[in-house]
Image (tube, rainbow, N blue to C red; front, side):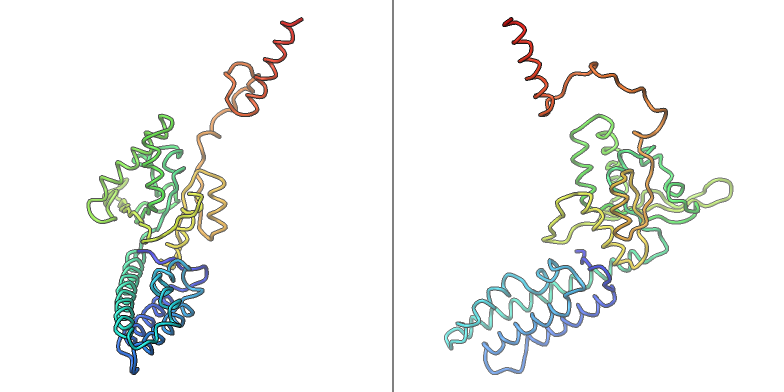
Length: 321
């Protein structure tokens, strides 16, 4: 479960806010009020205060998931007709259940945020690569020297993060498309499967001897899952940048983006990521001779169909003459 900090938000400030509203929720379980209706109002006040505290720090989706849930909306909508004496037991039960669920959700969010801060706070280089890196880099992942690509000393440790949207893209590409991208996608996923033996983390390459008497740094991998209810951005490249920026905000340090696409490199820089763009195979080698045309079958797009119709009409006119 990955909280999504907003730009400029501080991870420690988010943690403090989550702990504060969780404590307030625990206190709201046994408020010093005389009626169940007064307890309902106390809960709704907690919801408003909590949302106001978190606004500007985490995404609206996270606030809805943690505080302003569907049950909160239903209780707020019914506040005008839940004051009756006959409804006190029902109201008490609904408020108790919702507060218990909010405390549990906040517990999970705090634990997950602490775990990610601890995991991403070590002396490793955090790195996110998009699909174009795995498909179009000069060498497949197994043969790629990530330290050389990133310009790092060979003894540094690298933590290669796979947002789940990247894994989904590679899974799709290994089943369809041209032969080379399909092979590269399967190759990358095979290495990831072999490295991750439990949960979402694993070791791609262990620390070992390098050239001469040098030490070769370890490369670890991690699949970064979406939190429950997360709605992805419509464009996969935007989603990858968003996940990388989220990791950078939670880690509170630099995340490197590896890509072969110019547009993705630009997106990454705008989002505040440090970008390493590798050359794409399409731009390497000598420039091929200009194609004079006429040697390849015409496509089936709208322009091609328009040309086909024009040629057919011209041929028909000649035959009529």
